[in-house]
Structures are given as C-alpha cells and as structure tokens.
Image (cartoon, rainbow over all chains, first blue to last red):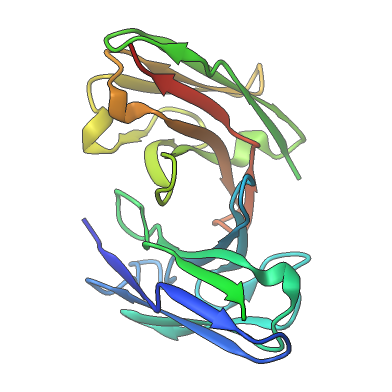
Length: 112
Length: 118
C-alpha cells in the first residue's frame, strides 16, 4: 500500500500568518493518464471532511484563494496564507492513484 | 451537485450484520465513482469500499474483503454497504462519498455511526 507521511503533525499558527504542510508518498503518485491524484482535505471536529485541493493544485469550488497546493511525484505541499480562525482543524493529504486509496495521518492546525 | 444522506448505522453485536444505505439526490449520481469511507474515533479516515459509476467494478480494502459488499443502484439513486461478520474494530462513522468528472467533483454525506460491541 502507498504510505503517506505528513509533517508536521501539529501546527500552532498565528492568525494572519502563513502555514505549510508537507505530504510525502512512498511512491510516485503520477498515474498513467498523466494526472497526479493527490488531494487535500480539511476536517473540523464533528464534521465530514471537506476537500480543498484536488490533483495537486486545483482548488475546489468555494475554497478561498489563500489555500494553494503544489508538488509532484512524491513530495507535495499545502500552503495557507493569512491563516484565519476558521482554518483550525485537521488537514489530510490523500492519494487515489493506487488502490487502496490512502490518507495521510493528518496535521492538526490550531491558533496560538 | 449531489446531496448524500446515509442511514442504517446502529449498535450491533460482534458477528452481526448491518446494511448501510446512502440516498443520493442530484443529476450527477450516475456519473459518480462511489466510496464508503470510514473513520474510527480519533483516527484518520480509511477507505472501506469503492465502486465505479455503473457499479460493476468493486474494490475493497483487505480488512473488509469477504465480509462487506458495496452496491450501487443508478435507478434508485442509492448506494449500499452490506456488512457481515462485524468486528469491534469495524466501529466507525461511515461516510458515503461521490467522486465525479475525473475526480474534479467531490461530495460527502454527513456519516452514519456503526458501533460493534457486546
């Protein structure tokens, strides 16, 4: 199975500052169709996960521009510029290039 | 867009069976790859099962193979998960999830809680 590792696992941030989360895969996530199926999700306590970014850098509808994704192959980054209070929660990277699709361990973002 | 509403979760004894349902509304359901993704308390989510838009191709993670069956009904706009031989470690919130249009669209239900305990 593809293993995703995230760092850091805990991220205290100051409101208005930027934050970055790294996701590394145990193998390249580039699929034979030319797409890289690496997504980023955000989950608040008691809520369903919500996708923010798909195929590395594409923002989902309604996602603020302060969220951006980058990377290729095995190394990916989610960046949040100007963190707001509503951004707290757990962020997961997930891959669905290979079955079984897998989630990273999650990064808990909290406000300092 | 598609709205997804899960039902069927409850307390069940180890070894028991349960059938989860997911009612979908919206025109794109038949284009959806559908997943059942589960999340045990305090853990990361985990795929349980996955099926293609016409429901013919099905995929399962190893811990549920031979015990769970996913099915998709594009006439009734519904997704199901038949769960047999339930174990304590199957305890989780089970989410119904749609992936459509080369995964450019993604929708989740609110989840239904399955508790396996004696």
